[in-house]
Amino acid sequence: MPAEPGAGGEGFGRLVAAVRDLQDAITAARLSSPEAHAVAARLEAVLEDLDAFAVPEELQIAGRRPDLPGRGQFFAPVIRWEVLTGEGVTAWVRFGRYYLGANSAAHGGAIPLVFDEVMGEVANRDRPRSRTAYLKVDYRRITPVGRDLRVEAAVVRQEGRKRFVEGAIYDDADLLCEATALFVELRPGQP
Image (cartoon, rainbow, N blue to C red; front, side, top):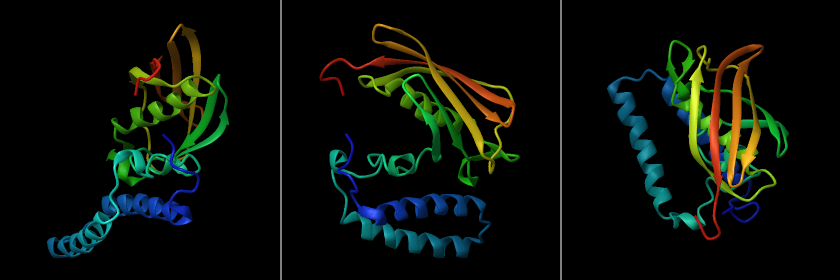
């Protein structure tokens, strides 16, 4: 369920961006134990401040602001939409340091996050809501961090409530990984 338009205002968008930057900064940092304790203490103070604003899931803003990158949630990398129709999508993603596995490569577990976001968007565009039933990823090359990568996905067929989607991530012309997925349309009243 989307939050009301503009929930949290521009400030919430700024907060989301700051948390994303924080994730990358912590990942890139090499701190001594005393420095890590000092930073942790400051973050713990912020967490205590935020406790006063906790609401039930149905009232939260994170993940429910379609006007913000990633719908205002922090888990998946930001996806920039270029073409988005009910048939297919072209988008761009850049994995930051937070998603680093090793040796300048994105963690293999972060890649299905992007596919689920992009493929789910095309599977649900101009159609009744569906959920991921399965998602299979084939890795062809390492997926680099810190580069703009093209993501493509399309609904390849529909059988009743089943929507079959295929996608791929490219670095220029190089195929990095590809995915196949099944999305199943929800029945009335199904969460």
